Image (cartoon, rainbow, N blue to C red; front, side):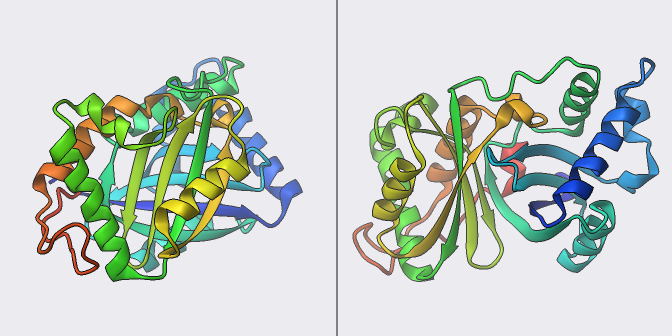
Length: 272
């Protein structure tokens, strides 16, 4: 396993003017003509840590980030760092990543390349596999039932999918997945891609029906064109990780039982 710990952050903006000014100050720094990835990574504000993904919501009220920290970093240590880094302009909700599907191509070099290009007027292409990306944050209310639901997904992949690309067929037509993060505790997030024309209400209804009251589901439309490193999210990468995850999953009861649990997980290392 790589010597690191991942943390996911939801920056809920509380001071929009200060937040925008803070972001623009970074644009000014990284827009310098002689800026390079190595030079950008050396700035002391990072404190040696690596951000590998950042995407704002379409209403710009929240930005999500995924950080790669040294192994053994505690949640409290990371919380203190991210609060310093964000300068008090947002409420920073921190979650420690326990398992991940789809992060294999997310690295700091891609993040900084996108940051420099955006600062110099060469904007990111954003997510490439579909026109829309949605984030669903599942606050799990029924841990046992939700574990059974995940076990049923793994079972369906094992029974019906012969290649990684087949994994996307478990979702409704046109809906695909590009990143799943399981957190310690009772939360997880999924990034879903859809065609144009799909609305917030469509996604919320689908998520609520799928989870059947076992989680409270918060849905956000993401603006990947304003994000950093979103173009390294991929349905193919998620599918490869999903097949590995499903094959490694051991269920202790039939999938239609609420006692089904997953006793083996691939962890983050399988996504590197």
